[in-house]
Image: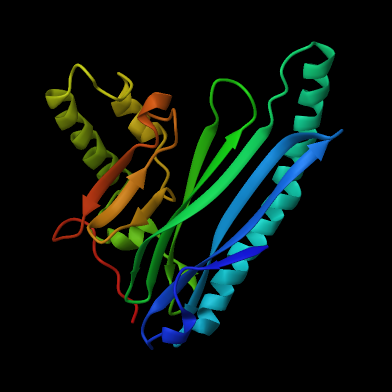
Length: 240
């Protein structure tokens, strides 16, 4: 495992949380042919004050990364070997699989950590696919933050959020009609594919995101929508 320090631990201050990046990576071969390369990055958090709570979060990400390598990537290797045999027997070019998991810490303040992971997998075809996941943590007790806690005034969270997103897309439709990046039935899809776990925090507000193909074509990428902090909108959490 390669460990890459992002910041110098020796210069920690009491109330700051610093981020390290740990990496598991390898090239896997079959009959002398490279068939799968993977790079799995995950965070490790260091703090002078909150290390006991952060160790629980660190262990969670370390275990999750190792389980992904052992199970999902193990299965992909088997699929890549089958794909290799099929390609060779039919005189097709051999295409190696690729997996890249990266993370971005988007909020680190007041005992709140928020981050997302993008997992890219290429298993043949014209292009690979990316799946995003995210977490927001109350570091004071190493517990996840729920979306509904950020909108305590919303009687119906799903309706409040999806109405907000639909309005944002409606405004975009009026200004970019010729290059509109969403499916025509986006209003229905926004509600059908809304996931209360698909969010993360920034310093401007809460980002709600959708997966590729949920509400837009592949070329659009992963659609994101900002709901800013403020009165009658999202609250900015603080746990210390």
